[in-house]
Image (cartoon, rainbow, N blue to C red; front, side):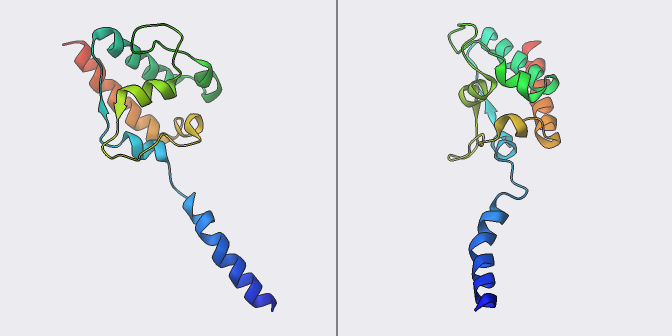
Length: 125
């Protein structure tokens, strides 16, 4: 009876354990993302948020606030900036539940740096 129970327990738990391995929803969200903004003020806000994402620790970053799309200061956190200005290439992609931990991963930091460079070039045109 014990071997059957162990195998059954392993069978039930395995998908749950495997589902979280190696997945970073934020990294997937940022792949082929389209950054949308209507004016230079919004572009500057996005650039400031990305710079902070690259330099600030996760805790400090989670407390930081940015302008919303109307320019009202102190309204959006980094997550809201990305949700409102970064359009993923597929519906159903999310930023994930561990956003502030995942934003500090090497892969996400590399992608954010690439996006920042592109936006800084657009700002200088």
